[in-house]
Length: 157
Image (tube, rainbow, N blue to C red; front, side):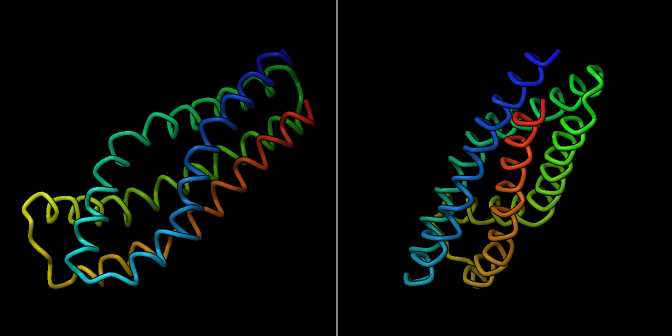
């Protein structure tokens, strides 16, 4: 059963790692860069970044989520309580991330993408980006902790 836990945890690390790296980049680089441009540029850049991110990022996100759930189940079936708990913790962290993304980030992404598509600059473009920015560090932290938990799962099993 350990091989299934290991493979699942490794796949989880790969999937979560992609999202984690993206969120860290946004927290460390993109947020500061967008704060230095005018609202029209912010709308065009953020709208297009979100267009491609929202199309492409669900795949590694789903891989990370499904692999974390698989590692949890395989560890539990195999009687490895520590690995089941750490993989389960990763899964819980990813679910919290998903809720934050769905409730806060995704609606902002859609609004900025629609504005970029229509070549308009919303009067609240800066406020939208600031709302998005407020949770990006939290999102990156949740993803980072999930990667860490999956790493501990590998060590524990």
